[in-house]
Length: 158
Image: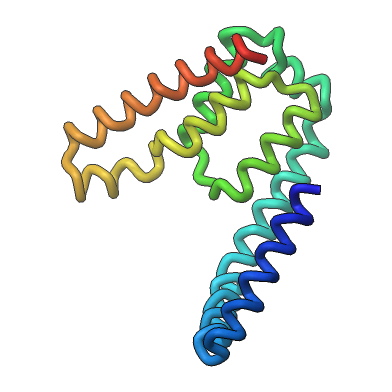
C-alpha cells in the first residue's frame, strides 16, 4: 500500500511539474532516463551475481555463517564482507532482505549493511589521497565502531 502511495505522489509531482514548465520537465525526464541507462548494467550484473550466489549457497549455509546462532564469528564474517564489498545501497538492501529471508540474523545483516555503507577498504586509497592517511584511517575505524554498536542495538531490539 505504501509503495502505491509513493507512486501516486510521484506521478502527481510529475504532472504538476509538467503543467508548470513542460520544457524543463522533458529535460529532467531525459536526464533521468540517461542516468537510468548508465546505472542499469551495473544493477543487472549485481542482481545476477546475487542470484547466482544465492543459488550456490543454500539456506543452511547462510544460517550457519550469518544466522542468529553464528554469534561472534557471524558478526566478523558480516563485517569483513561489508568492509571489502563495493555495492550501491539500492542493490545492497534487496540483498540484505534476501539474506534475512534465507536465515541470516538481524544483527549480522545490520553490521553487513552498516560496514558496506560506512567503511570503505576498497576506496581507502582514494580517501587517503584526498583527505590524508590519518583522517581516512580514523574515519574508517570510527565508522566500524559505529557499525558494531548499531548491530548490537539492532540485535537487542529485534
